[in-house]
Image (cartoon, rainbow, N blue to C red):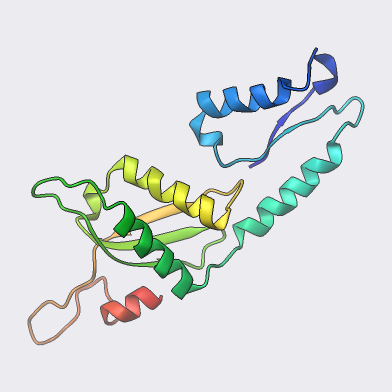
Length: 171
């Protein structure tokens, strides 16, 4: 996504108008925090070329693949720095991460009690990924999954797993 304010030629402005508009937009609409915002004028053609440049940057970000070892190192340093909030009987513990082969940035977090991952912690992870890897303009999708475990009967795997935990993390 790229957000464009059109008719920029039609408003009275000073050197702080755009910055204030961006700040107000990001404050009132938190989902615009990681979206490029531009001011344009279709009538005069002012900054129209920047729309295509921004769209191409977003397209490049959509297909960005992170080096697995670097991503895992960064992720585990973030959760050591700021662990998930403690909830008695609902402890969330992260065990691994992988990026899927989706059209957009999609990450699977393997954890204990994935249904209890706090919304605030999802935002924390989103912000860390955006600050570190810059997925500007892209939907970054997080999926929290339990680890597929052996059934304990005859060494068979559970229905969700294709192999060991290590293989599941490697993707």
